[in-house]
Length: 196
Image (cartoon, rainbow, N blue to C red):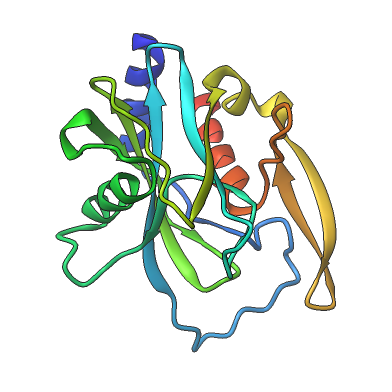
């Protein structure tokens, strides 16, 4: 585990390209005038069992209902930084205390189809905590092995119709969990950093 943490820390220090939900769809034309809202997600490593903590969003939510996601959300005006936004959101969504994780760094930002520019923040748990899903927003909190989501062989590309066009996206399913879209793309960016 120490090796993975150090490799991740070093990989995050290197510059690299930003990603987007449109990476696999080169014909997509994005409006120059689009306004992107800043957001952050927390990719939280649990070293005790070499896993990553993910959530299943409530099926009642307006955006991305029932999807697998990192804890996270939009940056508020009173957040001191994008990292502070990720930590606040993780506290709200899964009960993570501010002092229970060490930030290793950030990946380049990711643009979503819903108009957010998301900064993935990678951190490692420094102590156990009582997991508390945010009522109404998080249906489930679960762990997925890092060896699974950081292995490029476990990724496939699928497609579906979206707004009248065929859209391609990464998928890295795990058991009953269908990890796709922005979450899978950000995980793939992390994977690529470690394997290149």
